[in-house]
Length: 424
Ligand code: PSV
Ligand code: MN
Ligand code: MN
Image 1 (cartoon, rainbow, N blue to C red):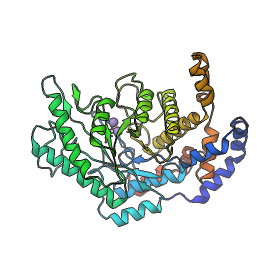
Image 2 (cartoon, rainbow, N blue to C red):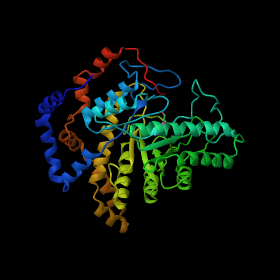
Image 3 (spheres, rainbow, N blue to C red):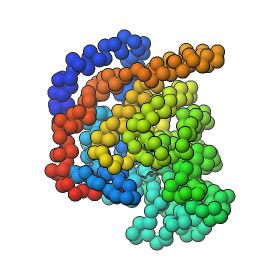
Image 4 (cartoon, rainbow, N blue to C red):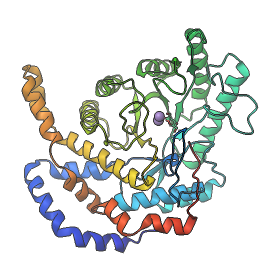
């Protein structure tokens, strides 16, 4: 299915006067209004191919129907999101959940939808049907060199797929670790993982980045070999200038100060990218901004501050991606909500009065500093984000239009009600 441009125009026209009324107040208040608007227009958030279907949990999965059955249909789904919000201009693939066979036609299809290929994700946390050796006791950390070689070869193959598609980054998330004390020699596990990553790093094209994603726990419950930002930073530093740390918001121990982590990684030039999601307890993979919107804002506030300090391009110097799972919501609706929440947090961060904040900090004026941040956070920037979408030919309210056009119903008609998207 495709959404006709004129349907979006028609909808925007209907909503136009309401939108203009809401926007007017904001325009007067924001000094660098046009500059902020352009930043919002430029900002793109990649959609993971595995988030387009119902994820479920180990207790069950409740598919909603009309889910993409192939890589082509996943690209079409991201195309639908991008048509509606003009902020989801890239797709991130996971190998072997996605099997790109005919690169030319896959690339052509993506281009038709205005999509680029974001970071490629490798998978050495599951055993595949045709796989010679098992990852039960790890992949890159494994005591058996042959298993490590298999994991290295897989990552190199993923890079090759990515090169053929025009991607520019590899994300490595390892589930390696241990479930019980004594199971693993931490130092040997680290060294083996580093050596394995070094072999993958050596195969990176010179214009590629490697993202080392960390996660505190799960599926291993005692130790994880890339368990926190410190460990990821150590790997990335030892690997070299093309390696960076990737922050997945759901991968920290409770109450971790993620905004501080982000600030220091940026300071060291080692922050590579993001996996956005939200959580109450752990790696819940819930809709971005659905549980802790203030935290999301504080993270963006540090991102804007740190990127500006290093004169980085907000839109292109870091990898922005969602990593989510949907158990009870329509995945496409959920992704529209995630993108909206990310754009809102970014817009609010752009509103922070940086000069006054520096003064407040230097004068130890704690109350003032808090007021400055919360003034930005409590500003309803939704009309601003909507205006950016309008200028980019997206819909004023993507979710409302998605519903009124009955997109899911159309997808169910096309694909059936008992579809299973590949992925976790
Ligand atoms: C692991 O929890 C993770 O966040 C990694 O990014 C994986 O690639 C993805 O989720 C798999 O769903
Ligand atoms: Mn992730
Ligand atoms: Mn995760």
